[in-house]
Length: 82
Image (cartoon, rainbow, N blue to C red; front, side, top):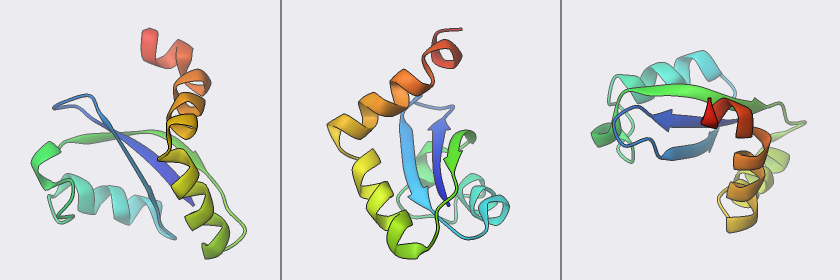
């Protein structure tokens, strides 16, 4: 599963993948993930199911590119603008 979190501190996104979304978001918000510990709290703004880990890592890499970031912003346009 691919997920996109938004930091409520700096409003930036974090893209990752996991097989246990609830546990992973909890780890992010408790500061247990080194790459995001200074940006807590987070809210889940998007997720996608994937067939396997290889599919998830490929999709995660895409969503971290400029095209992928544009995809997320277009997908969430009404959500992000209110």
